[in-house]
Amino acid sequence: MKKLLARISVFHFDPVLVSVSASLLLIGYVMVSSASLHLGIKMTGDGFYYPIRQLIHICLGIVFGCAVATVPMRVWEKNGPQLFIVGLMLLIIVLVPGLGVKVNGSVRWLSIGGMRIQVSEVVKFFSVIYMAGYVTRYQESVQNSAFGLLKPLGLFSIASLLLLLEPDFGSSVVILIIAMGIMFLAGARLSQFIVLLSIIGVLAMLLVYFSRYRLVRVTSFMDPWADPLKTGFQLVQALISFGRGEWFGVGLGSGIQKLFYLPEAHTDFLFSVIAEELGLLGVLAVIGLFSLLVWRAFAIAVAAEKAGQRFSCFIAYGLGIWFGFQSFVNMGVNMGILPTKGLTLPLMSYGGGSMMIMCCAIALLFRVQSEVAEINAGTGSSQRIGMRVRHE
Image (cartoon, rainbow, N blue to C red; front, side):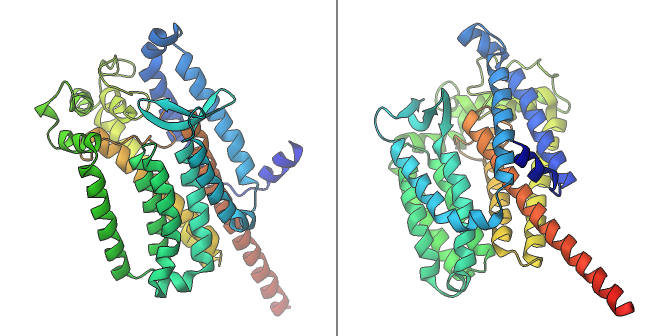
């Protein structure tokens, strides 16, 4: 523990990143508490059942995050392929009867020490590390050869197939977006990307067309009021939440949609609770915080590239893509501009596995920023010494 604290003490903390992350965690915790008090009473007889557990999730996430932040980037780069293989193994293990935990018809969780870990979140984290290492090692191949793109996408296709078997269509899309986003920023040709996106788009449409529950989700999203009590129920209740919130909301804790009208109010549809209780002001505040988080991740990536840290650069880009895309999908689903997907709102929604992995992802971004700041500080010191020697 002393060594861990000693390593943390020499960190170059980014005040913007600290403020944004802490704000999202705090607002998320308050809103999860507001959205789940009644549910805790109904399910367990204890109104603080979910808030207490979410606080434990956040504390564990911070502890694991501190551990992640102490690991040098060269270690992550070296072990990226092995970590991705571990992620694939976890996706296989969760599908083994008796090992995976089934919730609402999907087998996405492993129970470890009494806590459910969503395997797809772990795979997303490992995917960023693997892809950052791949484009660092094979950047020339990625830029000049179609095979350079197809090689990693083969592994990601296997991961996506395993996710679809759970089923978890949303997470499979997220990891493909992470992979393709990193390769695009590494300099892959736009023409090759257009072809790949076209292929993936066609496959996605086929998956929707030949899967009844996905087709129902898409059609109900287009006109939720056509069947407001069945297929369009979730979206209708979410839209009612936004309508009731108006400009400044009905007040913290005063929302009624969360009272068994809005399904999964403390997880996937937390953003709708925010809209009802905090209004447009709260919605814009949350959107602004996520925008600031993504901007900061990309700014750190640019700084890492200028410092010659290509692996760290692509890690930051990958994390920014992950945060931005997943938060956009979650908020889009809540606002009715995207079909319903089971993706949490990063750093805010209830869930042990998601919260801990997101905290680790933020910690990895802190590590990138700290190493870049250390390099820049060392360069500045060397330049000042050189100038003093020349002057003398």
